[in-house]
Length: 441
Image (cartoon, rainbow, N blue to C red; front, side, top):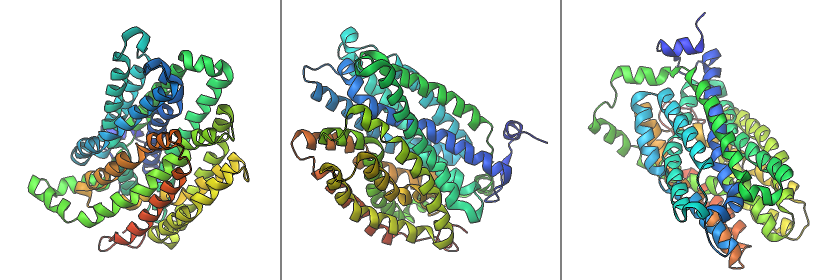
């Protein structure tokens, strides 16, 4: 019997949509990478209030935090570029190669972030170095999500495509759980002062160790059979052929961009900024807000898998619309209940994360299924990363600025409006001929 590693080395592939042991290994590879990438990316946001005073010199701590969040947003600026570059690599060299390259870059930059000297040592060089490393991470992660989505779409069993979609994207949620878990442990053991004084570096070292583990797992995965068949056929091998395929997908690319708008805002509000939002409202402390995230994030994973099961049976597109509609209607009332202490932080977080379960669990594989294999990663990834960079990466910065201006109540209004736009955008989606409503063959 050939092992996964041996199979990969010999050029083994997973059959298109047949699943089995190879499909499960592919799912594990995609999920493990998602854990690390999400952990590393989210960790920056949740630790920003603590390392800001060391790496972003300023007399005003609030301004220093704004600088740190600007560094968070800058990483998103290059993600569309990274989506194109890494996507072209994945579309040309294979899903497995692209996934391994991205994970290697993520692991190296995590180590380097952990050892960046403070501003007290190198002055403005500290934020400059940090921002440069975030740019590298942005390039790496720009193609990570779309490469993983294409990989899962091409290897999942046809009747479990959206369950696999939800499980693979749950790695992103697990990464969030780990990031808040690490923050909770650091605060409990070192205290706020200890984390601010340098304990935050431990989190990025943990990210590097997790990255090496995920790289080892991805090394044992096999190439997508659907990709191998497409490459053997020579489809879209020329630049003109690729450009023709891109032009034929303009409508779906616009739909992906607009749908991602509400999904990414809801995601970063619910999984990254909500503790800081609650803290600014004065309803919880730093430690309480971090702890209150853990149970809801666990529930979110179960909700995503459940939504994936529904999507496989009732259709992913209509299930997605129902989820986005509920998110648009429910966001503002939930946050008003939190602000007026009518509901506790943990319950508000729980309900909000359940509302975003449908978009998070379905969009990756749904989007991947809209585009031809030869250009799938780029055609899906670029519009989604542009939207993520414009609206997701800037969300903490926007929310922080609104809070400082005394307009914190506008934050949930923005999130609800974004969800409403995305709901409308789903009606632009046109499924490829020969595919059923859920996007499968």
